[in-house]
Amino acid sequence: MYQHDVSQTLLKATLDSVVEECVSFVGVDINICSEILLRHIAGLNANRAKNIIEWREKNGPFINREQLKEVKGLGPKSFQQCAGFIRFNQEYIKTFCSNKKNELGSREFLTKTGAQGKKKSKPTPYASRQPNPLDQTCIHPESYNIATRFLSLIGGNANDIGKSDMQQKVNAVIQKEGLEGTAKRLNTTVHTLQLIIDGLTQPEGFDIRTDFDKPDFKRSIVCLEDLSVGTVLTGKVENATPFGVFVDIGVGKAGLIPVRNITEAKLSKVKKRRSLGLGPGERVEVKVLNVDIPRLRITLDLIRVL
Image 1 (cartoon, helix red, strand yellow):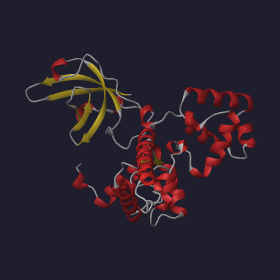
Image 2: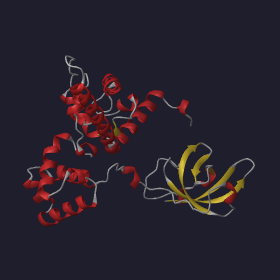
Image 3: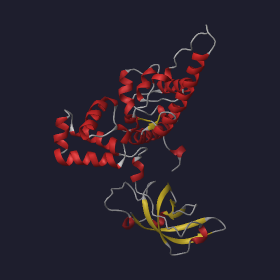
């Protein structure tokens, strides 16, 4: 089955759903993401996404989540929905603020030592903009107050987010008072407290996708010439076609498992399937049946689904 064989409306809806799910799990860097990607964030639509890009082009990078409220058409409700999915590269923000501070300092010096009678330059809006360490986390701004009180309770500092010292302080309090006891003390729910703990202890730039299963490629096999008939490898399904499944085995060229080699006995019995087909992303163990180097073709046999 090919793309043009599928209902385009259904295909678009499915793809949009996948992107929205990814955004929900991973979040987006507000200062580098595209207008198209912004549209997939909860609370944003085409107009709001466009306005965010225009604001960024006019004013420079966003320094904190609160600045989203300055964007035209982005009201309290929209902010509430989208804020938790917005991320910031803290190193980039710190560098930008430092450079801007130096630039402002030079301007202030020139204003004070300039010719008498000249008008003083208007204060720039960047002067009052400060990065918030909590903005790099999955913690929603509505929970910042609770997060701040929790930091005070454990004797932590927002600048230590993601460091081992933060994890130790969190563990010490939770082991002593328990998750429920701590949540009650902060007048919040266990679920909210757990999200705050996750946000404070996850390292900067944490990406949930790093924990996903990855194919275990053999380091000694990196190209077609390294393959030989009978070699057993693990890989990840790249694409499924009516005549077979293409699998990435780490040699720069996907191998093909012919459909005749995909039998019910080789498929996992744990996962229910509508057909005998394998889906993109599934990890499999395969055996090399044939390697045609001149034609860049690899034929594989499915051993089992991992």
